[in-house]
Image (cartoon, rainbow, N blue to C red; front, side):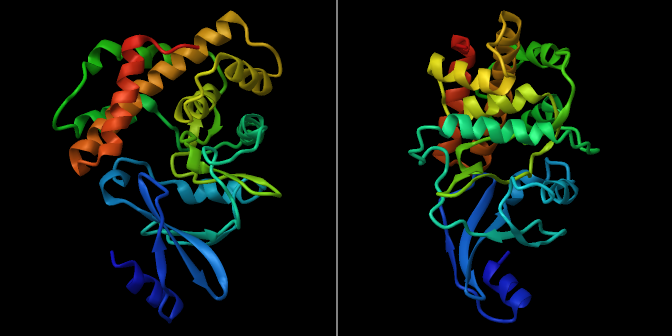
Length: 274
């Protein structure tokens, strides 16, 4: 798709865009439209056919909260989304806020507290099977760890609407507010998935930091049972995203996916620390 042609047809004038380095499964651009700076999300074709399409329903629910940045436009067919650009906002990784761990996990807890119900179920094993089926060069003994999906499924937790993709770029820290953005993968899931997605994707390995995050989310010091379940969830996620990264490296040959694959598989081989 030629984005410039698309935007000119939409706004009836030429729109200059600038590509950012944000996004993995999407490409993010900035532009100024009607004197307002915006972010433009353009989905990448080689991943979205593997995902279920219910984002609009979920975004309508999220719009009733103050979690997300204001949406300006959404295309139901292409899933191009235009939102307000948050001036001076930094991602989780780039933020120097000493309270960013607590602010981020409180956003996650707030999302879960709404108890939204949607038809879309985020099924890690189904996604894993889809990713694995498209791997051309299998670089890991995936089958050795597939028992993790069954043990995860057996966890006795109420399912809630989860974000499911809590990478650094999906948190925005501004001077006035913290945002949780990009609900493309959102769906009903075990809430521990979000807790460990946040911790794992942002490489929070320090034990004390993790314990503060657990306590903030749970409202109490985690029990041994809760720690075991969180650990199980993290290992299952490492397997899921290893297959995802293996698949995308096969397709794109971009080093970032190879690096993600190596990180996830090395953690599986070593046994993820709590």
